[in-house]
Image (tube, rainbow, N blue to C red; front, side, top):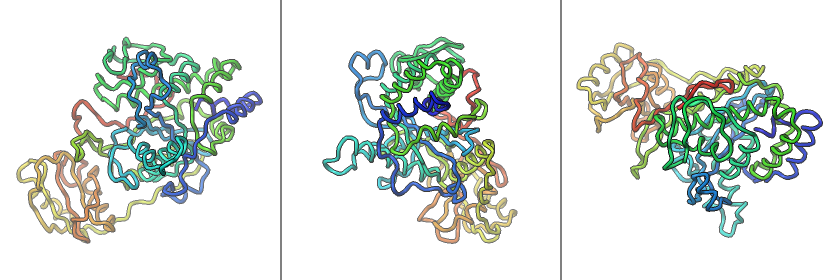
Length: 461
């Protein structure tokens, strides 16, 4: 991001040539499993760039590990994943963060946390593969996973490890942040900061973006910190302090060349041309929408996301909005297919723990024109999320019921008879025609998709 914003004018051209000659590259873009679900969007000239923070401690000495509070356990999980969408005009940009614990389908490996996709690809590389080939295999599987999840084609890839982040943040200079309250996370990230506006850089910057312990939103607050820090970097790069200082520009390019790994085809000059007219208010940051906390079969904490079809629609709307702000004429996303309520047989199962709710809901469905085929208690009474379960191919039936239960989670289930749907009532259910309640915080973690812009300097946790 820092490099491409510098690529204007003759000096910028020279710096970009220097970067092109020295940047580390990897074969990150897969040949298959990376496609756009919206053909109209695929035909445009917008760019999707995946920014990845690798949790590797490779290259960090014992002294640096103590200084940066990183520990010495290396690992290769990708705990920071941000998808950057840039319209063809470059007059706007959207950054979408993916929580590391998002429970997703990793192609060829089943359901697991998103931050393990890179590690799966790395480990599955052919026997005898070089380290470079293993890293490329990890990046490719991560891209396939996020493309499948978002419905977007990932065009480019950029990765930085912990040591690289420290080097880059030092060169960029101090980034101004604003904390609502003082924090002391000496035991884990090493983050110790007072309340209020302050400038951070280097090792402190790494501690700032890594803290999640002691924050009310846990990993979600860490994501906000990453977004806020990136906003500050963008503000610095767009300021005269950097743009008018050849020495700072050259130092930044040199640091990036030694700290960042990019895909084989990323053209910094082309990307710079797209971004040359960007303004802070037109750069927004969001987090992929989720439905609540859960546990997997191993008892580990996971973050449950919206149904894939819902996510595809969310990303289509997001990119269309960004492209419109950038001066393009977005194609309106197609409305989900539906049928008449009379053609949607519904079985109602009460898992909310509220006695009599299934019977009440059945009466409301009947009044709304839905034929009710069953009314019973669910296997468990601990459902916190209302679900609409349906057989593959019955999306139109499920969408019809979803219109009467906004916010319910769509779920393909092989156990549901074709031509019917099941409505499993959770504690968030408020009645037919009413949206379900927002998920309640659990364990101090709150999912948020609140939008910020790069111009926003309000305080954060």
